Figure 1 (cartoon, rainbow, N blue to C red):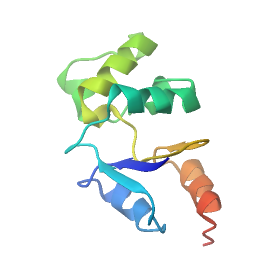
Figure 2: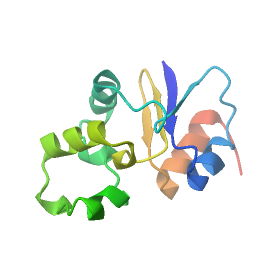
Figure 3: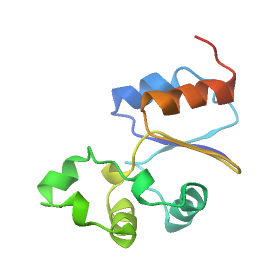
Figure 4: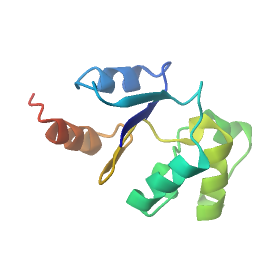
Length: 118
C-alpha cells in the first residue's frame, strides 16, 4: 500500500507533494473522498494514536467550540471520521511507515524516505 491523503486547496500539501515522485502512489483528496474507518484504523496501527493524526489547526475546532485539551482518543477518532479538516495533512502511508503532517521533521523524514536531497 502506498497512499497519500491530502487536501487540494491546501498550498502546503501541494508544495510537499510536488517534491516527490508519486507515480505508483494512490492520491486521495480527502474533501472529495473522506477517509474510511478502515483507513483510519490502518493509520492508527502505525501511529498508535488518534491524537497524532488530529490537526489542532482545523477551523472546525473553533466553529464547534471544542476544548481540545479535554478530548480523549475516542473523541479524536470520531472527529477524524466526522470531518476531513480534522486530519493532519498530508499523510503518506505505506505498509510499514506513516508520515503525518507538514512539520519540518516530518518533511525531512519524507525526503529521506524518497531519497530526495536539498
